[in-house]
Image (cartoon, rainbow, N blue to C red; front, side, top):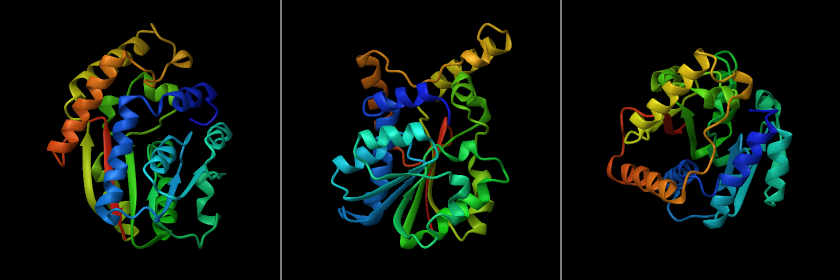
Length: 253
């Protein structure tokens, strides 16, 4: 998404409100609580932190040792508007950046989709080496090619994943997957319908790729709150689901 200033601006405005971001942020905090309980002094790195919505959320939950990295000057600028500790780093060069840095929790949400098959293993390796004993790597990723649509074009997503894609690279880096679930299962028919319609419009030339718009927009407050509550209920009632537009994972060394 680097270079798409308008998308970063939308993300900055809507991360605290949009149902999807709210749901993801709560999933991350739940993973932290499951591993570390009520501790708020753990060291947390958000690699590919975007405009800092997750870091801001965690700060409001009382976490005190937060750091972010991102390869977009737009993202870093927005993070600094939030008074967050964020460093400009191209994640392709993470291997050489502060190689001795260690963290209790590393978060890398919706970042792997911008890395090719050759670029991803070194990134995962660099993240794994920075985990402390008992540390966790939390990552959310775009899932299933069926869900590719105008959103992918607008933000430059180059690939989508299934769980099997991660098993070899995790094994190569001594990472054990504790939790892997697709979400949102309950909304997947609706999301799939929208994305297929977007693909048809692009294929027929009704929408031009260079004018593609992301799905980052705020619907009517009632709709937004309903979608949030549906996804929250799914997360509460069903620990793992077999299908959805995103894949959420928690790993440790």
